[in-house]
Image 1 (cartoon, rainbow, N blue to C red):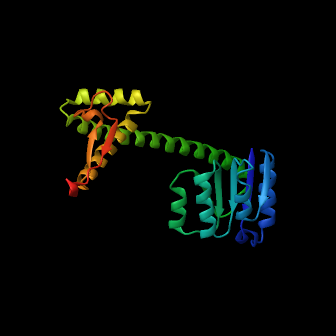
Image 2: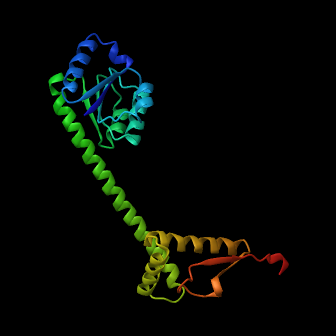
Image 3: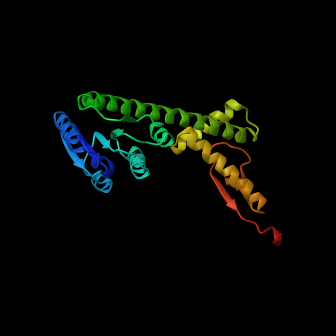
Length: 230
């Protein structure tokens, strides 16, 4: 396991900072490699070249600068983070804990608890990532169904029933090598541009002037007519 201990300036000013840091470092060394760093900029500079499994952030007062760094790290790195602080703003802490991938320890972190905390932090981090991925998949599916419903309504306006409209969209998706959701979005985009063109005095006709969504009917071409000259 690769870990980093980040000590900010407020932690370093504590009377027992040196002893606590030595204790934490000794325990983490039993679990793998450890780097101790005192600068957020240093951590961010090496984050892409040095894989980090766990980061222990030590601070006396959780400030905006440290909070911003943690937020950036949660967005860009696959690192379980443990934050130990003596002072914090409740709203500030709530914003960090919302994602579920951060473990917070108030007051003094007892060194003997560190191994258990690291294991807990990694479990929570993996579980939260899985939940986020599952939520995103579900969200994408719901968005896809909404796009399909809109696209079917557009195709049905050409005289097809819902089952036939669904089949046409599926066939077009297969022919183009895209998902049904992507094909639906393309149909909606064509209809949207068609309506915008009509509003601007532009005539949009399907290829070969086909008045319906059949084979190849979704391949649209645009003929621009200057209405003022007609």
